[in-house]
Amino acid sequence: MPDLKKYLERIKYTCEIKNDVSTLSKLCRHHQENIPFENLDLFGGKRKFLDFEKIFNDMVVKKRGGFCYEQNSLLHWALTEFGFKVIMIQGQVQATEEMGFGPRFDHLALLVTCGNGSEWLADVGFTSYGFTTPLKLETEIEQTQNNGVYKLQGLNENEFLLEKLQKTVIQPDGNILIMYYKNIRCYIVAGRNILSALYSKGTTKHVSTGKEWKPLYKFDIIPRKWEDFKEMCDYQQDNENNFLKNNTLCSKQSEFGSVALWGWSACEKVFLDSMTEKIKWKRNAKDQDELKEILKQHFQIEIDFDLNALPTLKSDE
Image 1 (cartoon, rainbow, N blue to C red):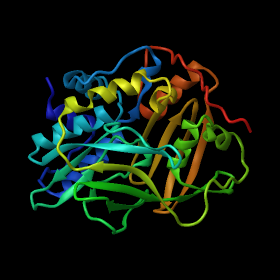
Image 2 (cartoon, one colour; image 1 turned 90 degrees about the vertical axis):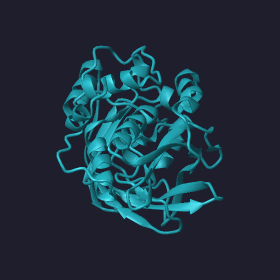
Image 3 (cartoon, rainbow, N blue to C red; image 1 turned 120 degrees about the horizontal axis):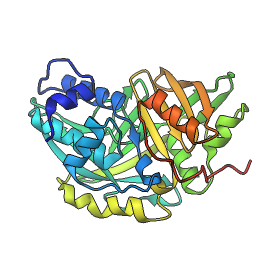
């Protein structure tokens, strides 16, 4: 049975728990630092189900990670047990400007109300590119964190758009890459794994320039039930063109940096400030054994199966 003590041990949380934003922020940060975002089972012939006891067993007892439906459902349960008012909300991630936003319910996030009545967007299931601590549900204000600058736009009474400023990334050799992370996802959706090119070459690349806001996802604040996400959870695993089905992912982040595996390429970054980060190291796995060693060393994940997909989305450069 799900046990709060085991969850707190899993995320290495030992502070006092109060119904306030300080506790909420600490819980979210500890969760993301210790439970990786990952979809490895999809490449090992295993299927994911919206079964909370299984999710708890996988992510807490077996010390695995999960994707948004799993990550945020686990956090939803814990916050509710701690006395926070929490609702599940649906989001639509933007793939590219041309493709627009994904289908409804392709992302699960949380709206949390603290004891003082303040409302916060919480999300521990958006890979290492998302925000590390909750964002206040206020529009048209810049909310700065160590890993980026975020802003919410109101689209109507119940719908909002989450945006992030593009960032400057310094390569290990000192070259500068100006980019916005979600553009990387966009290129991969379109069939070009720009990460492979960036990790294997030392040249400067400019994906986009200037100070520019880019959409992450739009969401509404209508309360949802977990069952509402079942259809999209199945779609993520069955549709051959789906992003998660075509990209092996494992990532986690802290307030100081992030480490991510994408395909068979891995790197670690440190946040120099909210608009600048530096790649500390990068590495390409040559075979299954090296890939598993990366997962064990940097994510504390051990798998007993081979990942059945090679890094199929390669750059043509």
